[in-house]
Amino acid sequence: MSTTIASLDAVEILDSRGNPALRVSINLDDGRHAIASVPSGTSTGEHEARELRDGDPTRYGGKGVLRVVAHVTDVRAPQIVGLDPTHQHVHLGNLG
Figure (spheres, rainbow, N blue to C red):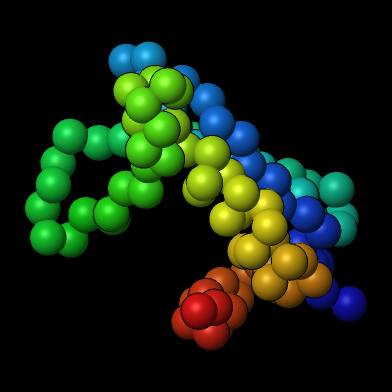
């Protein structure tokens, strides 16, 4: 039996410059887990990921990432829970 993704969670954190950033944690059904933080970069090249900010001027000058947190926990997590974490290239291509 292969290992599967048991859960995926995300939270808003502050990076080293005090800007909101995303932290995602993944738990596998065999007890392993990993955490990754995604601070915003300063590069804006054509191959850079597009940032999605909340735009609410009352929170961090509009730079909050609560919309992204909700997307990870409410949309993406249900799509990947139960999948094999070693075959991401197969799964992610099918996630709209």
